[in-house]
Each structure stands twice: as structure tokens, then as C-alpha cells.
Length: 548
Image 1 (cartoon, rainbow, N blue to C red):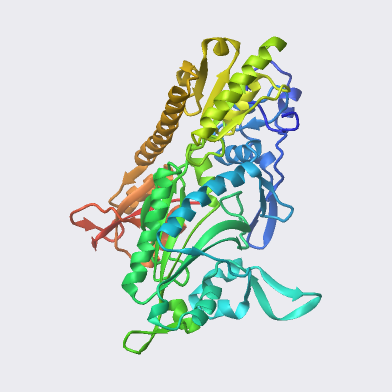
Image 2: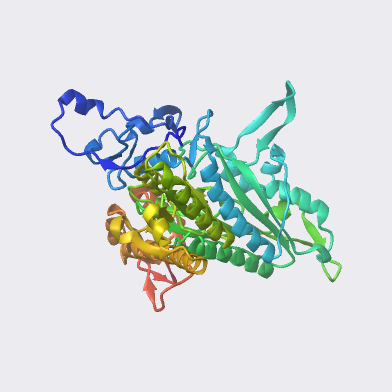
């Protein structure tokens, strides 16, 4: 523990009678994150997280007594709070190339938990994992007109290899629809070869100008599924099935109450007929597109000549889908559940579900406490619970409590000499701070302790979802006019209202308010409706919000 550079969150800065010079010095924050670069147009400037909170009131920042490392309160500066958590919880760090990040072990463990769940679901629904090359001939990208138009600004190109200029530029994978179709064309010949359903776990490169760790980086990790079918109906069923898989994952594993629906034409994926999405409300009330599923129709199969012979001997183009979730979901978990203390992880995705902190003062107490700690650890691990023992003697118990709270561990078990004597433990919940979340005298008996801990983990999972759902619902406003929409957006809320206007009207809203149509939710209200923009009849309501 002595090598860790993260803070303990043990006190609040209090207003004091410091000299003006000392007060000014406290604005020079000692955050370990390096500068985040933002490019707008052709002028690139450096935006430093260290400077991001200068105008904030430092007296309210949570701070370590030993080191001047802080977590900015969410209400004070949401972006600085987010960056502080990523640094202090050791989720990621900035890479040496602008806009890249290094995902550290604790952050990657969250991604592994996401992978573990989704891998099972993908295989249950008939998909197989495989891998496609990272380098794609530029001519492949050019084959699908809307695809190249949509992705050209974000492409990273390789022009030299082995010291020589390449005959054809190579694209570093931004997504794989093109290379997948190139291979599908070689593998699919007859209707007997369909459906063909694959998934790959891979990295993707998109040359983003405005970056934010986990949310938007030059390179990120994701899974991308690709399927080919004999009919449009089969492809549509597949696209809807996979957005349903994502929706259930968000609710049941991440405790994030996403809204599932269809994207507008303006927001549809380049090269798709339809895009389905799950939209999540973050703690600052911005929307996060957390996962998408696309019905590609025959756009790519026609561009690449991906055909099959049907049962009547006729040549047909296949119907396709693609769908993906990425490491931005980790950012979504941070921004949905985190608080001023740090991370708050849903138990089903937490790398550590229970941390045990042994407590002793005298040397003769140490052996008994450690034996009890080891026994409790073995009991919980045997029951499938992910347990960590913090038995280092370089830090005080209080420092450890704050450290693991900041890391978002759902439960903490404390074992001291008195607990050993009574055969009990003390258990504290991360989601309920202070004495309210602490329970004394829980028996170490195997059956009692396991049942109690599992019950608490389930309760925390449910409470996080309920809390996030309540927050979401309180910040969605039903509107019936453009003025009402503008008012809702100006207050930082989501606006939900009837929509049947033109694409041009949608772009006008984006230009004037900064909000976009996040989706047309699958769950629609009944009855007649009038478009909030034009007054014309509208069959659906849309959700508008500012987004990441």
C-alpha cells in the first residue's frame, strides 16, 4: 500500500484564516492526470484538468491530510470530478499520444466483467467470436458512399510500411463493416450458409478532436457483432434482439436505467437503414449513447457483392446487422453512480465486492485477527463472492476505509479483537454513508454470513438502479411546443415531445439549443399527438437532450 499514490478521503477543507498567499497556492492542484487536449477547427489548444477547476471553491474539496490530492464535488465541476475519480481510483491514465488513454488494471477489470456477461449472452443467441485484421484497404471504405462520408473525418491512415510508401493507403479500423463484408462474400454462397452470426472483441481508432477518458478517445475497446441473413425480417429481428440484450445488461448488471429506442434519420449510423440505441442519463443530466444496434439492410452487401443463392436458385444480396458496446460504458457507470467520495460500483460489475479490513493495535492481537480474517475470506470466496483483504500495516484503518470507498467497493467488513472474541464482524455499505450504512454484530458463522452478504449485495444492486431511475424520471420534461423544449433544455433536463418534423427542423434544434433527438423510445404514449415544432399530426414522441 505504501506505493499507492491515491488519496484517502478523510476530511473537508474548512474555511480558515489563512493568509491570501496560502489561499492562492491552494489553487495549484496536484492531480496526476496529464493535460487533455481539445481541438476545435484548425487551432489546437491545451486544456489541462489541473486548471479545469481553478474557478471552483477549493474550500469544499475533499482532500487527503497527507497529500494535496482532491476529488472535486460533482455539483461544483462535473468534468473535474469525473477526471479526479478516474485518476484517484486508478481506472486509467493519459497515454503519450494526444487523445489516448492507458486503461489500468482496476478499470480493465470492470471491462472484463462487462465482457464476461455479454460473451455468455452472445453465445446463447447463436453468435461465435472471431477476429478481423486491424488494417483495412482504403478502397473498402470508399465502396459504401454514406459510410465513407460519415467516417472520413475520423479516419487514421497508414501510408508507409517497411520504410516504403504503400501502393494503397490502409485505414486503421474505425469499425469493421467493410472488411467483414469482404470476407462474408468469400464465405457465403448459398442460403444454407445463413444466417452467419459473428462477434469480435477488438480495438477501434477514430481520430476524435474532443476527447474525454472512456467516453471519447482516439482508440477504444469494444465488441462488434456482424450478422448476415436471408430476409429483411430476419435482420430486423436480430437488430432488435441485440438492443434488448444491451438493455437487459444495462438494467440488470450496470444498474443503469437506459431508454431504448430508434434513432432519427439524422442520427442513424452511416450506412444503416435503422439504428437502435440505449440512452443513459448521466449525473450531469447529459445523455450517453451507451450501445447501438444497426439494421444495415443491403447497403453493404450491394456495395461488396455479398450474395447467396436462395432456395429457388436465384442470386440475392444478404441482409445485415451490426451492433456494439464499448469501454465508454465504464465512463457511464462512473457518471451514473459516483458521488463526492468517489466511485460507486454496482456489485455485479465490481472487481472487488467485499473488502476486509483487519484491525489490531497490539502484537498479540494480530494473529487472532488475521486467522479470523482469513477464515471469513475463504468462506465468502467459496460462495463465489469477490473478496479483497487489505492487511497492509503501512496505513491506518481509517485511511483504508476511505481508500476502498473511493474505489467503489460495495461492502466493507471490519474485524478487530472484540469481533474475534464475539465471533462477529462489522459490515458497512458503500451506497449508504456513515453510521446509517454500518451494521454491527453479524455472525461469522458460514451460512449466516454468506446469506447476509449476498443479500446486501443484491440490495445494493437494486438500490442503485432505483436511485438512478428516480433521478432520470425527475429530469425528463414532457413538452408540447418548441418554446417548452428550449426551456427544458436550458434547465439541463431532457425534453420528451411529439415529433414529425423535417430533418432540417431537427438540425435547427441542435444549432439553437445544443440538443439532439436521442431516440424515439420503444415505449410510446397512446392517443393523438401534434408535433411540437409544426403542429402537424405526430405518431411518436422523441427524447431531446444534450449529450456526450
